[in-house]
Length: 121
Image (cartoon, rainbow, N blue to C red; front, side):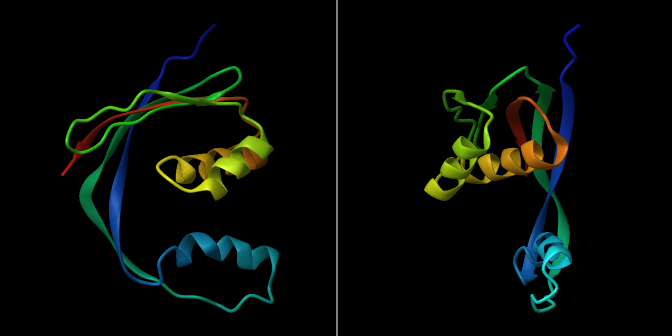
């Protein structure tokens, strides 16, 4: 039985210094030789609205931008080689591919369908 999509809101944040220091802290738990880092960040009322649901195989992204522009959906095979290549390539989808790779590795998901349908500014 197909699962219903979940609507989510991801709040924004402003990093005053130490960009991604909180997220990167997880790497220090694996490699204690890394220096301790710090970050100062604050949440904002801005954010992204999306609908997310599992998919049997690929990663499907339906992006939109704050001006209302929608891009054609992108569909990528949900495998580590594709995700790592897309992450290293850079561009609009590199961050999403990195998150998908992390999810694939740590949570054993098969596929995801993400529709970023709006913004709150």
